[in-house]
Image (cartoon, rainbow, N blue to C red; front, side, top):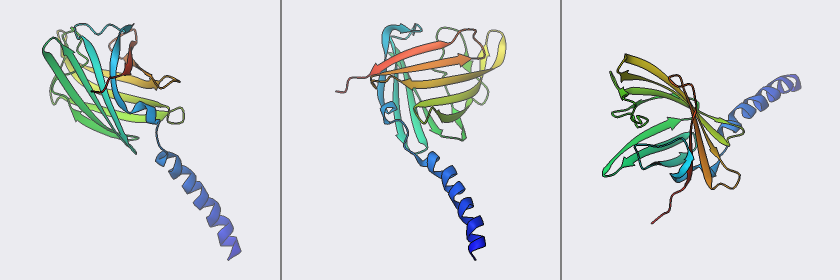
Length: 177
């Protein structure tokens, strides 16, 4: 019997080692409401500012992006699941900064989210088909959501297959009313 325990016990420990890290709490500083800081990072023209609302519940993360300029605003909700691909219906691509690119076809953005750096950084990878003046094109985006050491700034870095330079957005916590 002790021989079986010597074999089974290490296997059980290894199984727990695999399960427990995924159950660990993510960086709680990431959750909350964020607004871009004017003059820092990539221009948000024609939008006045960009807003993010992030909620975290275990492996479920909801990112709501809101863009606005003047009286026009639009929000897109991205319900993400850590370690799994999700398909999100995107009626209007919020990343369209006067570039003439619009979601097309089934209007589905496929997104996979994971944690990096011991759950300090949220990474997303997505693919969406966009309609452009050159026709339909698949755009792949890699993004990292990084919190400053103070927890007061959020930097989102995006690399897109359609651009040579990264996009960098710097946010601060939004004032609550």
